[in-house]
Length: 472
Ligand code: 9MR
Ligand code: ZN
Image 1 (cartoon, protein in one colour):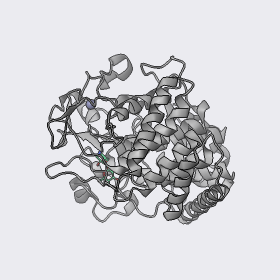
Image 2 (cartoon, protein in one colour):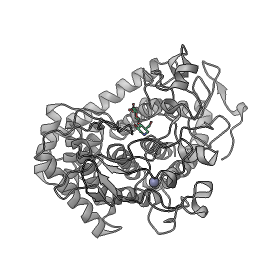
Image 3 (tube, rainbow, N blue to C red):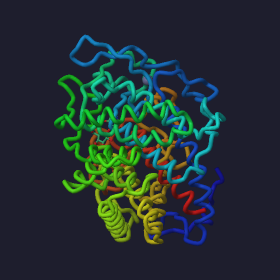
């Protein structure tokens, strides 16, 4: 990447170097576009169940991992559930965050298809299909394996414990388990399968149909199921992704199925869920924002004018609030607390701004979005570019097993960023008393501030793709 010298930048309030209004555009277009490929390639490098060859994966190549059949927890049944992406710095595969990642990537492709080439240097490159869709299909094929015949979708496939931090993927050979069906997983699954169906229609009709059938099947399970929240059984410590509220996932599924089929049955459900309580967020536990996004920007105009109007005005109002917080903040960002994965929360809110800008173009929304991306790329109190492998200030020691094993950071990964809760020992020991925005440690020990995750990279992809089109 072309480097930008300090002279081209000017110091801001904190003496940090930022893009200026006049200088920014060309540089930012170049920067956002050139980041899409490395950030997108992270998904390929997280692939599970298949060998990654040296030609495509370099030092991160590995033989097929996690291919043993997994035991349905508490039973004598074993299932073949290989495939999908490793979630994060661990090798777990979890449906709920996987669906957030898929939803982000599919929305990104819909919003800016021209930002996605067929040249990500993955095995499918050059096959005539945008590599982001090849990559998403890899995840969808895995998700399909997690659906029971009655439509319910298992919550996760993991071991009971995390392996050593320097374990290669193929070295995690402890027993694998498939954990119980949850309604959050089933709702998210139904929704992303419905989002995928129309996008894969022209690529592979049979696959598109399979996605739609699976979506409908999951939806009918949901309709007849009480909420089934997931909690780790005793003795299991891998990620939980627990979500006590499944109404937003049910809403998202109804919206996506309405978009895919045009059936009033789903529209009526979407309206009912919306009226019962709405969530406009894009977090792994709060998927209502995706329902809104597919409803407003899907292929079909929403036939319920009242619902469409409400969604639109809510989106604009939420974006105004994001701007207000961002404009008030000395850091130029809209998050007011730094939770585990703070960088994701900031980018989720940036997604709100960019969707709102699509509903009603506004320089105010775009300005806040630029300021947020600048923060991620280094305009923050620590001067850290929170994406690995981009410049000298990028994290070098992410809490990420393949990186620890290879003794070098896999490039193109967004780290979680400051977490004022100091949720790991290294953070507690070394960051105590620091301002919230500085509660970040570039250490492999700091899983609460320096881990990486597919659903953090995915929202970054959305922001990069949408902004590269905006700036052009
Ligand atoms: O991203 C998750 C964050 O929102 C939670 O606060 C945290 C603790 O429950 O877990 C994070 O997810 C981790 C998951 O549990 C296991 N894989 C790594 C994830 C990223 O740190
Ligand atoms: Zn694996």
